[in-house]
Image (tube, rainbow, N blue to C red; front, top):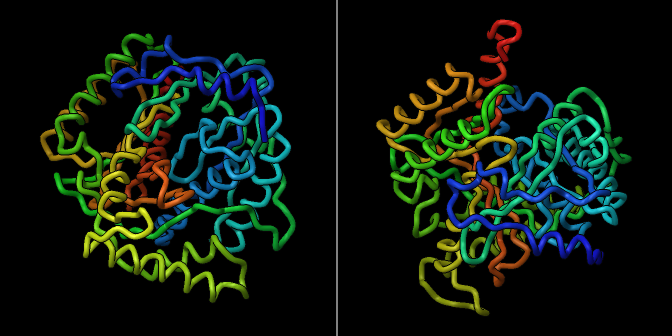
Length: 391
């Protein structure tokens, strides 16, 4: 799918080299007219996580991104992974195809992951008519990878409207399958090295001054930056690959329909086994070096992002966590932000890997015991306790 105007917009997006700059909203660029947002989230994700389906919840969120990017035939369209869901900016020529992908991925998630996924397609015209906008910039996570950042309130509004039942995309017929090429779920949970894995969501209060919220974000990021690896839950040398049956099953289900999974399962097991062998021997095969790949994997993670607010899943010690909590508590008391924060011992990794030999593989980080879904639930519960008019 070729869209010259979309390509020009994407190539001209501002790129932040320092993550502290993500709250500088003047540097974001508005989406062009005619675009839309593909939005999705798992219904009752906190209950699903309580039933032990945390890995499936993350895979559902990543599968939405995979399915939509595959039909758009490009990985550079802006998106944000939210743990239990996602938002993707879709150009005008891709809206019809994105709708088909959303319908198919919702069906696959219900049939294969036993989860209920809400999906919606919200036009930019609807967003702006409601008084919001969608503005995009990119953060340079590594020399090989940038991740899109969203501002303007439009993505949050679109998600809220989806939860109200508006702009819904009907689920596809039983047996429909999206193109999930590249979706990977091979990694064991990653244990904290610094103390705890902490998932944080902080959004500006309706009356907050932009400069005050920007200062808060810079302060929180500054504390996180003192942790090893800037708080990235993956170690600088990358995670150690292991053969895990849970990861094999999840990836096999994404590759093939029921009744046709034996060969897919064998291929996944062989691929993982070869990666483990090459990692242990530090050999290179066909241009692929496993140790180089996992080091690059650490750099290509989205452990921090801006999606109408700050979202981070970081590995941090007790002193750093206490400092961040104090900053957020003070900002909430001053009417600068609303926030939720969830602690756990491990992080989860879900991946989109178009090719092992390329450098554009993407890795999504969330907490292994609820992460962003639990942080969002906590933030919602706090808001409900506030007096009317104070939110």
